[in-house]
Image (cartoon, rainbow, N blue to C red; front, side):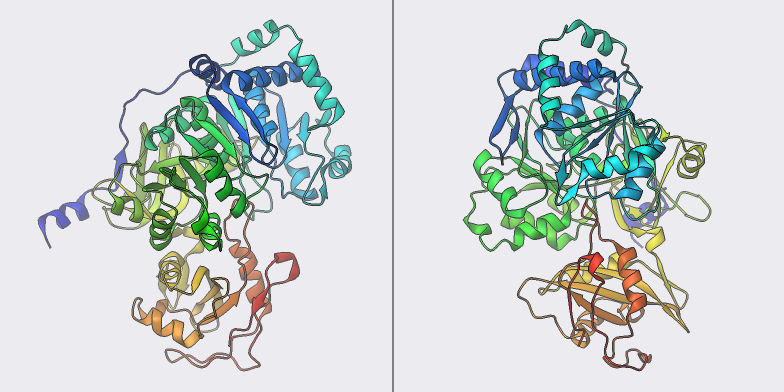
Amino acid sequence: MTTSCFAECNQASREVGPLHPPLLTHTIGEDLDRTAARYPDRDALVECWSGRRWTYHELQADINAVALSLLAMGVSHGDRVGLWAPNCAEWVLIQYATAKIGAILTPINPAYRLPELRHVLKQSGISTVIASAEYKGTNYLELLGKVQPDCSDLKRTLIINSSDWHALLRQGRHSDPRALTRAQQACSASNPVTIQYTSGTAAAPKGATLSHHNILNNAYFVGAALAYTDRDRLCLPVPLFHCFGMVLGTLACTIRGACIVLPAPAFNAAATLQAIEQERCTAVYGVPTMFLAELSALDLDTYHLSTLRTGIMAGSPCPKTLLEEVAQRMGIPELTTSFGLTETSPTAVQCRATDPLDQRLTTAGPPLPHTEIKVADPDTGHTQPRGTPGEICIRGYLVMQGYWNDPGQTANAVDNEGWMHSGDLGTMDRHGCITITGRITDMIIRGGENISPREIEDVLRAHPDIQDVAVIGIPHPRLGEDLMAWIQPYPGADPPPPDTLRKYCANKLAHYKIPHEIRFVDALPTTATGKIRKTELRDAARTLGPCADGPRNGTTPGSGEAARNQLTPNQGTSSQSCT
């Protein structure tokens, strides 16, 4: 063992980010006003599909009008305001208006249906809902009418772009601005500013409560890592209802006077590429599935993307091969990845745009300023040596105030020493950079061997015919669990024969990590934020017989006709035969 390797293995996996620059201590409303005073004529917001545009002076004026309108409606400090809408300019106006008056913005996932909507409205005590009339065929007004009798706190509903909406804005533009001044003066940086209900597949989403101090500082440090200035223009196709959009996106821009470019109400690869070209964007965000869709655009090479400089790929595991391809084909030399949680505002570690390419491709980066990270043994809680996997724990200004009205769940997530337990597995290298290896709950135990799906997924994603993959554990009578890979080939590509894929894996993985069952689908089911719904894949696996494609490693698949890989219709995935 070399001296450097010995030192790395014996150094504890614990790292503190820089303690400079100092933390910001003002509110989001104050910060926006400072930017508008500094860059009044700079582009602030562009809504591409409507052609609407705002300078910082115009954006500040419209935000103030919305804020005064909300005050006139009776919304006051500490009130929860639900926002149920896809990406649009009004979303941004409402985000900053609620922050200015001390209300607590509670974004509602546009994909929610009655049970989820009812839970969020009741659990957070939302008194006002501002919503689109409908979205993707779902009548929001009708659903709100159905849940209102069960939600005693809900007093008022306002539909964006309705006659009432425009009337309120006119009223706000002619209201006494001193009412807003008083409301802003009553705000402090420690006040909660948003309740973010965790997305995913949980039956009862938890509301992570974040303050001005939490998210303003997180946006400040992320913007610094990307070297944002007032000359930058961010193409923002990710959902605004998530921290990725409303913290790393809108807030990171307004802190530095950069421009927010909204390409479409929901992600659309062509609209994103068109927005980058037409608005000469210097940065773009996305989850891996979004970048995959952009790379798959048949006319990708016809777009002029030369203005791109940086961006973030995050939200789910980011394969090195995908990062390399995006950086090369889309021309993003300073593309970065990051890691964090909704509960940590959200970013805990991130590479800087100027960090070495290999570091940006293989790690999520070191801790951001004023952030402490450790990698702990999930069973004992002891800090692991560097290079040894464990649970990633996070401490600092960025940790949420708690789950709204849920002290029990808060205590389960944040320990007595202030460490937020992420549930994610990873390692820390000698530079303090974090590499994500999987989720504790995703760990597969096959015949006593602990297997991280992430390692297998990374190998399969490197195959030239595979666009995306998800590996899950399936019950096995002797081994406890075995491995099943759900594979999404590139459009137009023929699915490789399962035996061929196993031979491909055999050159790169230990034998017990090679998937026993392989199934092909046209598209993997994902959440609104682009994360693969593995619970749906597990549910689908239970309804399918084993894939009759021969024995492997001394095991024999169950008898029966070769199963067809069909997820049920409500999972939104069509499929192809596994043989």
